[in-house]
Length: 442
Image (cartoon, rainbow, N blue to C red):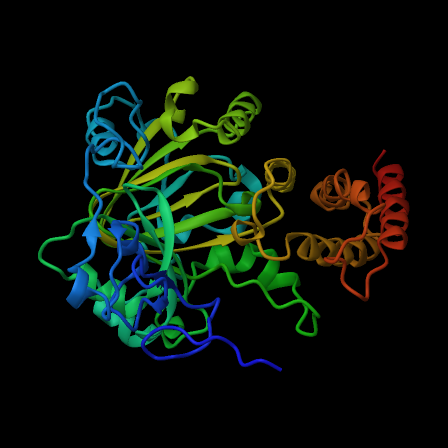
């Protein structure tokens, strides 16, 4: 067997898991870490000269910046192309726009008031903002906790996904490289870190999820310890955004509800209600080829601006469409959770993701599996309700909503059906229990 080709100054085989860059002179490939080229900087290089070729041919040549309003900043700045989301010009224009006040929709509450009993009684349809955290059950590091502290607890070698905001492009780099760039006195670009889930790190001990998110979470309540599938970890994210970071309009994966807490800095949320009309507009916008050139807030009747300052926690209900501007360097903590209160909307969002062919990387991990686990648990709950004269209506609504979508998938192979669950048998048993209870309620 022929030996694998060797590359780079380290003379190692090609590694798909490490960023590499090709020299435009000798055509050899080099690990970015070996030649001190970070992936997000590589996009700015026009012609790359490796360490072997640089002494002869001179330093690498950088791309020339021609404009500040396009993701491809090498395009001619003739003013005929629309402004794209995330660029410097876009952020400047966004800050001068007028929006409906978030006070129209935000529900201000004390931490002790945000309970499962309250949400089950009043519903969870509007964003909740909490300034007084007492009773919320949220544990956080002190406000002086820094990005260097995150590196200490998570590890400098942790590979993370970082967004180059002006290009709205994702790249991978080590956390230590991000921290080093963060502390540079002058930054040539704005980087945004929004996907650092740290449940499996030492930092996890410093953060306790709000009690309401723990109590309502499907994963926390229904995911079995002996599941064949790995348990989804989506409850503990650390978000570190540089000033002028922007995340365009989106719905969190699987229609999950979200909690955010701004430890320091400030976040501005642009919120849109998930009405039937707005969801249809959002799906059309998401699939359009010029999505980045259209500000989605202009396509709906009302877009609300909500400023979330340091020390504030906000809860976003299922399906709310939102964009986020980081108005100053900020650190925030947050997490996602599925629950019983808005199952119909969760499924609607999941089906939209399927239609939009959303990559698995950006979907709720094992969404279908958790739905089967919930359904199985509800069957046992429904059986236990037989001795009651008035079973809770939510116990009937929940399986009905779940299986208004899931039976459509039973005719095709589904890798997310747990081994101990037989879908057809489960559906038949649930249908029987639902009919029985409906008769008793009549």
